[in-house]
Length: 399
Image 1: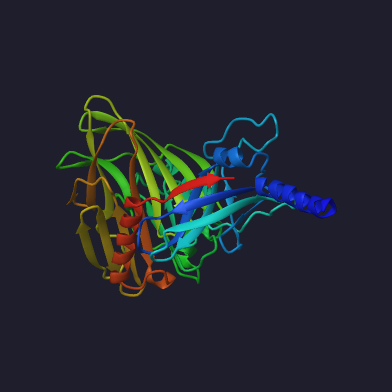
Image 2: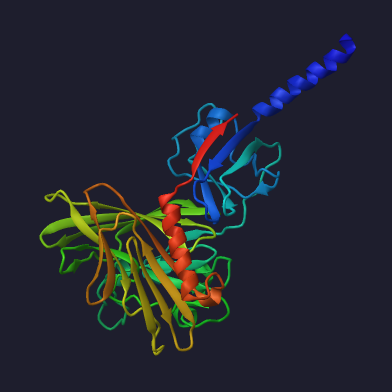
């Protein structure tokens, strides 16, 4: 009898050890709609609490069917040091799951591995672009963007012919491929990426407008805007989520000095980026901030026709062009208090307090990329984004 029980006891002990090497993550969803490519974000301190000693390069993430999932461990909110070498000084764990319509819960495991897990292919990316007058560019597998830095705003030296543009508007780079294109397009140069050579093109017009999601202070009659971003900081850079901040020096908004920090969260598989803008000012207890879409966003000589949607928390455009396809733009602003306009921009507005972030979402899609084909499909994407914002996922973690 003892010879039978000892192996069983050993197996049970081994099973207990194995169980201690797993963390179970349960993600709950109270939205009935399908939610493709949702990013699950877990503070690494929670992983370390139930799975001490787990290391960034020696883990596996599996879904409920045992499938291995790509993952990322970021440096967002890390601890400074890990003197005991137990894997505590990381920031956040990211992986993705697509919820089917009606799927209310999904369960995942984080498992220690002996073998090293190689990095996964990048689906999101951002960088400072000093070789193009301090641009800052970012992308995911659906769409790209850029905005403009100090060198572009600087005056032209006599006889040089440098381009000069003063704007805090946001640009769109429309992709038709899922792989990263930012580095390749800057390498090709301006005269190439303004034409579709098989990967997409820069055909969006920003100028002095807000572009697709730039901000300003609205006094009911006039929009007061800042200049090109002054400094930048990358906090995480793919493969699943990219997070970065752009700082804007103070500007005058009808006698109030206002500065802004924009935090961009760019997730794989999405048409929308998450924006958190923090405005700093003194004097009034609140200001009204506007987020804008350029009224004339199409490329040159495209005989654009624009359908504008103004629906509570969402401001949308569907733009048809003569030869370069159709595209949609949108802003979803859950705290919106109204929708208005100025000569250059469609505007959606919300109150802000100094030092408290305002969250909104900026979106874009080109019919030739294949993610959205019609204006009706774009409206459904915008509605889904508003619903996702109103129904955040919740997570729990246990050994």
